[in-house]
Image (tube, rainbow, N blue to C red; front, side, top):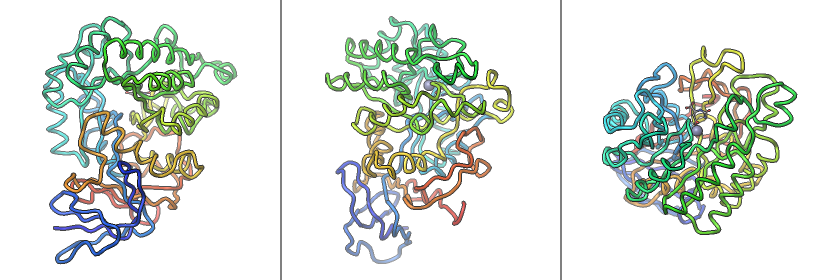
Length: 431
Ligand code: NCD
Ligand code: ZN
């Protein structure tokens, strides 16, 4: 069966071009991307994309699918359906499951389960250390052999510099990136929110910006010493943005991501004590948010990743101090990118799409994020003018823990295509 996506505006983040055109798909692959000529004849299904953007399928390199072990929070099935509903065709999942993805059995399980139940492609990330405990290295070569695309102890920082140094030497040898959650727990321990004016007003223990920034500095030094590819997860501080900028200027293989919540919200959002604003790293000051937007604009921050971190309602529905850190992100990401970055002119659509497609795909070394003829037919269709109010009750994710409930967002995914199959299509209106 052939599919023709007709009449849209193609966004090509590789050629850095936008142009009116059609996309022809056959047998799960992109056959041709054309500038308006008649691409197809014969037996064909049509998908009208007029007034919409047609982009490579979005890639989220930081999600928590929670399976195995925490299926009450999310499963590979529900998490990948949330991805599809959010416009993502590929997700890389973090290893802080139970058991931890620190051995090839768990990586293999995730891949098999994803093939069986997944609505989108799943690329597992292996742990850096056994149990993400920071002491002994995981079997990194085995993890790669089983299909891991990167290494991370996300949720934890690798505190021991000697351990991280050795991990980076192996990662370099294996050609995979280290994704670091940068947090000095000596500075952050016991903290609930960003340390600043609002932590003082609320009387909540703060997490200073330095808790992140010092570890970013250390990690860049170790990446330079080992030649390892280093990707900094969820950058939240102005200091971290500046350090990554300097590392790039030096030519180091350092990349960084920012989450939609860190460019959309400041720590002022904590004022109502909504546990859905509790996240690690915490929502930061207005100056930090400005620095992140500047970093997104000048290319210091390569990637927009959600850090989709679902929790069960009963876990989050407690007092602020007892709630777990994390918020869901897959189903609000595109709306926040368009509303907070594209419509205000901070990013043009090509740059925004690059940070959601080819940039994360290149960091992970996966053949995604392009519209090349012969590539897997993974595509996302976005209506930049469509507006809707965020309603967590409609989420495909089991997690409803979002601080964006009730927000009106403009610019939304309307169809998601994986391997030539439409896995999500928005029913109008409010779907
Ligand atoms: C994440 C989680 O719940 O696994 N929580 C969070 O607040 N971001 C862990 C992480 O990404 O650090
Ligand atoms: Zn993290």
